Structure formats: C-alpha cells, structure tokens
Amino acid sequence: MDITAITRKLAGCSCGREHTATLKSAEIGHGLTEDTGAILASRRFPRNIIIVADKNTLSASEGILPSLDRTGFDYTIKLYDDLRTADIAQVNEVILAARDREGILSVGTGSLNDICRYAAFLSGRRFAIFATAPSMDGFASHSAPITDGGFKTTYPAVEPDVLIADTAVLAASPAQLKAAGFGDMAAKYIALADWRVSALLTGEYYCENIANLTREALRRITALADRVTGNDEETAGAIMEALVFTGVAMKLAGCVRPASGAEHMISHFWEMKKLEAGELSDFHGKKTGVATMYLSRLYHALADIKSIEAQADRIDFDELGRVFGDNFIDGVIKMNTPPVTDQLTPGILEERWPEVCRIVREEVPPPEGLRELMLKAGAAIKPEDIGISTALAQNGYRYHAYLRHRLTLSRLIPMIKNPGPLPTE
Ligand SMILES: [Zn+2]
Ligand SMILES: [Zn+2]
Image 1 (cartoon, rainbow, N blue to C red):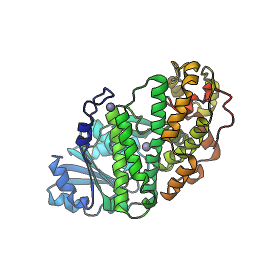
Image 2: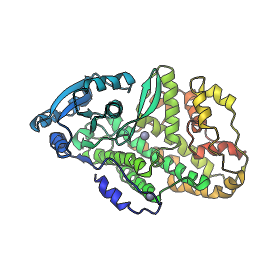
Image 3: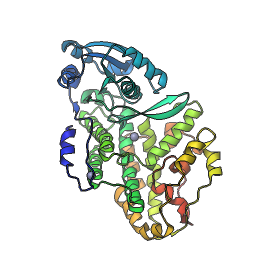
Image 4: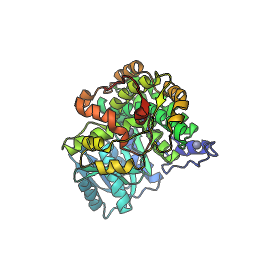
C-alpha cells in the first residue's frame, strides 16, 4: 500500500489541512516473509537489531530468520511465551535488550507492537513491524497503551518506519484474530457518524476526503465478510490494508476521529474496569465490534425520533463517581470540565436534529444488517461472547461518553427531554 500516493492525492485538500504521514508505505503481499531482510535493507533499516516476538508469532513467521541471515542482519531475539498485555516491565526489558542495538523489529501484533513502539520511542531506536495477524487498527499508531501498576495509560510512541505483512501468514492466523480485525473495521461506521455529528453541532474539524477513504476501505472489507474466517489470502490482505489505512487516516487527519468513536470509548470502559478487577479482557477488535453492534441499535433508535425537545446538559458527578469509582473519577471530572457540550445550546440541537438523524441513516448500517455481516465474518456480537457481564456491559453503554472530551451522539442523550425507551443492551 503506497501511503505516499494517498498523501499526494490529498494535497491541497478542501478541508484546509495539510495531510502528512510518517509511515511511507506498508508492504502487504504474498510470500513477503522471505523478503523481510531485503525490504528492511532497502529502507536503510539498521542491520544491528533486536527481534521481539512470542513463541506463537515467531513460529507463524517461518522463514523470517533465514531471510535476515541472507541479507546480513545481526540480531538477537527477545522471545516471550505468549504476550497478551503490554506492561511497563516489558517495555523496560526491551529497552535493556536493545541497548547495543540500533533497531527494533516487532514480530507480531497488538501488545508485542505496543511494547516495542514505546521502547523505541524512549530509547530513540528505529522501529519496524512484521505483522502476523490483521487483528486491530493500531499498526501505524504513534501512541501506545501500556499498563503500569494495574492502570492503563496511553503514552506517546513512534510509528514504524517499515511495516511488512505476508498475506500467507495473515491468512493462516487464528480465525478469531481476523474476525477481531473485522470488528475493529466495523467500528468505523460509528466513528464516522460521531465525527460528522460533532462537526455539525460543535464546528469540530472534519475532512470529507479522509472520511471517504475510510468508507471505501469499509466497503472493500464488508464485501468479503463471508471469507474472513477462512484461510483466504486476498481477504486477510484486504482487512490488513483497511486496518493499516485507518491507522494512517488518524495521522492524516491529526485526530482519532476517522477510526474511533463511542464504540472505542465503550471498549475502553470495559477494559479499564476489568483491569481494575485484575482480569484480562478479550481482543481489542472483539470489544469494539460488540460495542458497535449496541451503538447501531442505539443510534437507529435515536434516529427514529422525528423531532426532539432539548434541554441544557447536566452532569451528575456523584452518579459518575459511583459508576467510575475512586480510581477513575478524577480523570472523568477533568475530561468533563468544562463539559464537551459547553457551546451547544438546546436550540441548536433541536434545530439540527433532523440532520443528525440523516447522518446516522447515511453512516450506520441498521442493526439487523450489521448483525448478519458480523456473524458472516465470525465476529463477536454480544457481551457474553467476550466475557463481559451484563452489568458491566450496561454501565459501559450508559456512561462511556464521559471518558473523553470528545462529542459523540451517545453523549447527547441527557440533552433530550423524554427520549422514550432506548435500547439498554
Ligand atoms: Zn482534508
Ligand atoms: Zn481500534
């Protein structure tokens, strides 16, 4: 995928912003494991590197070490058993292991990428990814969610210089990882709707060209839904491209809006509450997919309300304190002072409501259609599919919008007088 070509197309964009990305290209294709050394060398990636992998990801990438040997790379391997979380302790281990090395090659996805991304940032090392599964949209991300003392914080980090993925490896990855990647793409339906709603009501920056590129990526992968779980290189490659693109789209737009809306906040709510209870949560893309299913029900129910009577927004911090608990309420208060609805009057909301409804109908597939699509792709659709209790699910559905200072359609519900019954699950 030629990212330079995408940025060239966006030159002089009508949104007025200059769109630039650090990642210049992502090499996604059949048999690229064998070419890993040659690709890295052609990008002038240092030859003195550390490889960070776990047993699953290294064995999935058979051929990568001979490829590096052939092209004169000098490497050591930091091998984990099965890395499921990214913790500051591992970041420090990688920094230590890389102290005599110039580059870090992360072989894997998710947490394996995140510890390397942050370690590379802290130690000033070059950073590359060999991706083993199309499971989430964070490959090109320039921040890393890392736990420290049981809490997850998002740290500034670096984007990879080089991103390589072999479609044969991606296609052979576990079905649930590929389905999770599909779920993380479905999340973009909600993200785009929230972005447009906020632009409409608060004048937040919005770029139609970037939104369009995201819609195109979505169309391409939804057309392949019934082939997601099979060992299908074309589909796995298409999901990977779509995921990498949406990561780049955030960088191009200079905000997370193209890829992340209320559904990512729900996923984050679940994750932090589970972490607080000392429990691991399921894959990122599974959680965002389940949250997307709920929001499709909620947003279409809202869009069915023809006209509304609006009232001023009012935040009950005592109630939020009970829901979020002592560990998180201070952060929540900070995010909501002043409230994100500060400049939005009830009059404007009433007047523009029909347009809000139109945005939902244009961007978000109706729940029945989305459900069918997700099931075809083998994606999780219910909280119980991902080990989330009904109570936790419902708290996430109801209170997620207070986690960020970012307007979502779900955040507007308290401003609607008598909205009538809305889906709670
Ligand atoms: Zn633009
Ligand atoms: Zn995501």
